Image 1 (tube, each protein chain N blue to C red):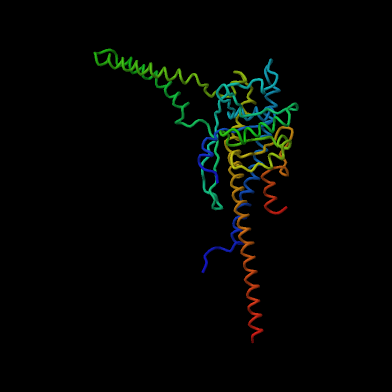
Image 2: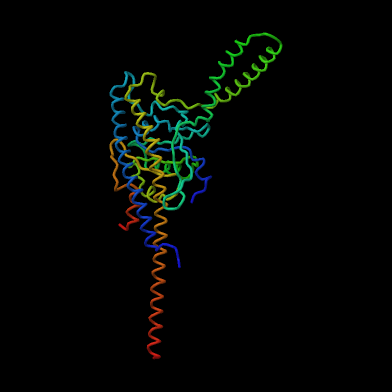
Length: 232
Length: 123
């Protein structure tokens, strides 16, 4: 006996899952609308309270060498409908990233200097150690020089000056929330829904094929019954 | 289904939108300009003077040419100007999302995802 569920049951299960995804998508859309409306309002307030000389917080202040602080990370995840889907997430620089490493080196250097100062010159070994350290430090400096050639990401708020109005900080907070929490989830849902749509269409085709095969079988059976009746 | 390599390098968000939308999103730190001599931006500021051809070219660049874009955000009223391109876009990567703008609130009737939903239910 076949253990496969009836095609209609499969479609119903898929559609149930699809509707759950649609519900989440609609709720997130509403949340994004609210958040973006608040963001535009904050930006209007920031423009209203702008300092003298600032015409409008906009494209005139964009940094031409800007580097992304928040990046998309995509990875495979298990779709509820059975098909693997891509899960999008957006986040700032990872703790083990290059930026973090550079910052850590910058912090570590004064510590090394302090240690060297506290040890003091007590003998030849210490002098050797010092030399080694100075070589290491010069190596680190070279690395830093190379790193400096590449523009480092800076807080975009700095493009607009040092004394930015609090409303502009609010805009940034709201935009970060939209970019980190809502947009990646919406993108994931869109991809997952597309996957379920594909599965529903395939299941519908399978059901139509099964129905056609069933009809054909019934017609054949009726023909056979007719032949038996004639011979009797 | 897309392979792992298809989405591994797609690390940027791209935006096609009006100045306020772009300013807000750039404040979140998604803006990126590639190294010279290319200096390719991952955003396009659209105003009343911007040609539809320029919007279409930017959409084409973000969705087809560049392999480092994971999500494309586009203001819905701008997507309306290239609606045929947005609605016929079916690739898995990058994902295209329509977002509201200051002067044009989000309209579910025009959303490409919800259009797909209606098609699935036979409307």
